[in-house]
Image (cartoon, rainbow, N blue to C red; front, side, top):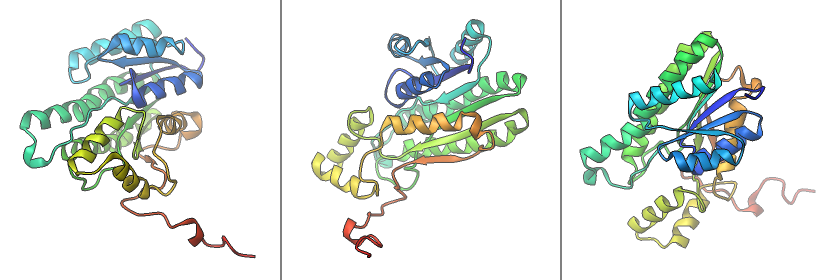
Length: 267
């Protein structure tokens, strides 16, 4: 066991979750990558000296068993990061009840179960950090109703837990990525959305980047850096907050051209 403690990251087999595993390991934690694909999670974790555990976050027994395994092996749990999640690109009128329920089960019920298990352990220790990966795209957005609804539910859970656990020395925060783009698991979803909107990838990407003042896609490393901060000792007074990692994205605003910036040509 390392001096800093034990962190468990759901969805740790790939994408943002895997990057968080690597970042927290670099920060000095022993990181347990938890995923339904235990073999892939083990591959990610072994690369940074961590470990892995299989988990179905939608199943209460599986969650409890995974947490018991972590406690049996390491004796403590200091950090939980809920990075597991799935998406669905469909209009409301085309979404089946089964599809809706599946999204809610993974994105809302799953974190409820893992937060509950972590909180019970952390309350006994009177310390801990819980971080839920939510979304900044939490407004009216076509083809995303099931996903956005589930993430808004997770944000509500985050705020309630922050108040319930504050007196135990446990902080609970959300980290909200903006548009996580090419080279990640989100690229496939964005390409599907471009197709549904009748746009080429180049045209779709140009439209998206116009809404991001920094002028580039969000990277998994950007999200992992925010997680690294909110689990640190320096963030002990930060709880119930949503940390936006969006490059300035606040809706559909378009950044002004460089020549329009105040003071650019000032003497």
